[in-house]
Length: 115
Length: 116
Image (cartoon, rainbow over all chains, first blue to last red; front, side, top):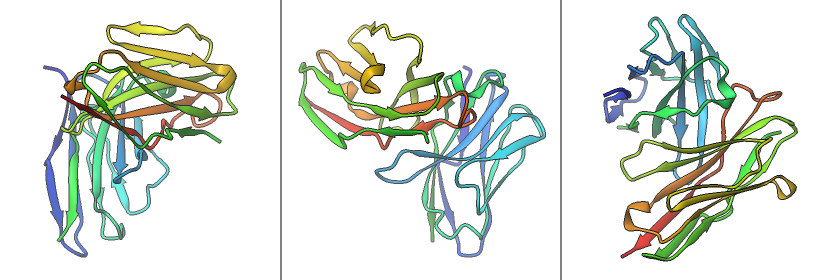
């Protein structure tokens, strides 16, 4: 089945540690996104990518990094510079590069907690 | 600036009741898109509907209907004869062409609980 796979489902980070969240899609979508969701809040955009080897910062990119070496993969690294990383992280993708009018398809999310 | 307001934080209804989820938006764009997503307890967001700013026709899909009114900047979502499986958090979202073209602005969501 086509879809977006995020792993792991749960992740724990120690202080000062970088962790990487995986996002893979087999929908052949051009655009991919990372969002952060905090309790009682909507989703906030961290990074997005419209094409391989290109990505742009979203509203809350500080403390995060991404790469887009393959069309189907868009991993997110939460660095030690992100002081409040505990949140639910959602990866999404959409067809085409006209981002605003395309519905996004979401993965099941990764819940990151601090040890 | 783009903004989406979902004033209803939580709603509880008894099964088979109708329920309307409100969404009010702000944008300076003349061309924009509105979306509704459902987030069940499993976590993933499920796309429900997209509506562009030039199409004010209401839409019905089974038990779901949407009322788009540009005059009041609202895009409300009604579930008729609610079912327990409708229990979820529902997000309204906005995306504009001229500004924030690469951004989808989400409301804070409305948690709907359908009581059997």
